[in-house]
Image: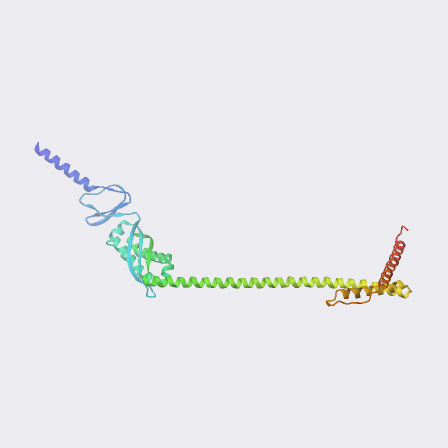
Length: 316
């Protein structure tokens, strides 16, 4: 009875060992490689699996999720011999567990060293100004180079980001002075441009005002000439009428002509700039006679016009 109990206990112990060695549960996001007698045979995906105890064993347990690897700060000498400190971050994901386990030793260390080396290579081929202004271009170049290099390892490098670029203190001060000088230069240029634009606009306004003034003077001169022309025509017509009346022996026409000239002479004397008092004889009777002659001439002209209108009218 005791021997039977010992055998049962031994069998139970063997069963437990077999179950422990043969049953494998792979958690989500992980993959296990299986080695049979030291040689890779298969990869276990997440879930429940049974392998041969003592013959098969788990070789490597790999995380298949995207992982983040910090790149420590390092000094880089640029193309123009400026020394800067640079750090970054790498995002990568294992796509092939077998290649990641057996194609490279110390996977994270290999990715880290490869990234740091290529950071020095890429950034060392650029000037400091390019380094500070083209960070996206640097990230793209690094991603292309590192992803291509890690492809045989079953990895996919999804992103490489440069976190910080720190120039030396004296270089930062020099850049600040350069930036201030550049801003002062732009401010002076803008001020000069504004002054020039204002002068141009002022000259354009003065030109337009001069053109408008000349147009106004020309219009005024045209109207004044037209008025003088009409006045001359009226005087010529009046002179013609007076001459015709004189030829017919009308003494009132002579009085009109003399009275008109007499009044014009008095107007010129009254509007003269001479401030001295001028005493001159004035025969009022002659002036009244002249005005009476003007009245007679006007009545005669009006009566003759009315007769002409009656002759033209078909109702008379």
